[in-house]
Image (cartoon, rainbow, N blue to C red; front, side, top):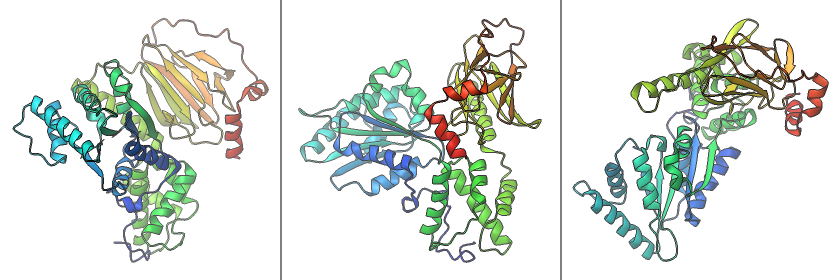
Length: 429
């Protein structure tokens, strides 16, 4: 491989979780601190969510390397199981062979084990990764397990880790009692640009770079643009770019190598890929019957100089548009505020766009507005970008359009912009 070419001891961007390569961004450090708190507090669950590839599993492995010897750990990674299979999996982790036990015996065995460990002065921790796949019945079993207690305190500590769908599941009415047991809840977002650069350099340093700048400075904005700051995607792009440089007999990575890697991977900008993936996941869930069909009632099409660069399908709920990766539609431009505007779609298909106190505002057909009910064909201006609203039910009657709201001047809007967005503008400069 290319390690000798770059004078490295090992590959810096492997995809398999490796705790020695863990980069503790501010968000990752906070999530790890939440995990560590479960050792000392037994009064509730800790829930950690993050997108695919955000580093949840690596964080868990790093945390487990540091737990004390008096902590007994059960780690569950296979979560597409029935309630009985789940209880069996937990007992296997505790050293039992439970496969001939009936459910009542499984529960009794778990209860007795937990009480015995508490009496012996040991703490018991249950970590469930990929928890978004757990059924409501299994989550209810987990809630019941969490209620096992001594005369003084609960005896089972629980960490649930999963993709963002876990939050949606936990917020369902059927799990109100479970949610009352959640003490800490944290979402791992994508790496901001400063952390992304530090992340790449950290992994190179662990691999043996010894302070050498292997990636040129102008590579990092492109890495952010195509990876969205998701660690796993950063790894894939950087690894492919290093292979490109190696093939060109270079010991450093240039912007040209990033371009070659993007071309080889056949990637488009992350914001466009994320929207396409979300639409496919919704289609798969609907087709499999996992949830009631949710019809995309309308969409917005983002373009730059007449070229379409992203689409965002609108279903009932709220979609946020802005500069940072935590938005539903990311527009990476200095003219776009961190959280620029939101699109709120009702169950009747009516979508309202609202300015989120952005610095440069939103224009509808050239007129600056704070809030506007969209009609099919409305053209929205966001900085240098155009966003076309397409309504699947264009012939249906739309309610109050809020066109009675006065247009606001740029001066007035700037006076109303919050401190947060002023910081945005300063940061962009």
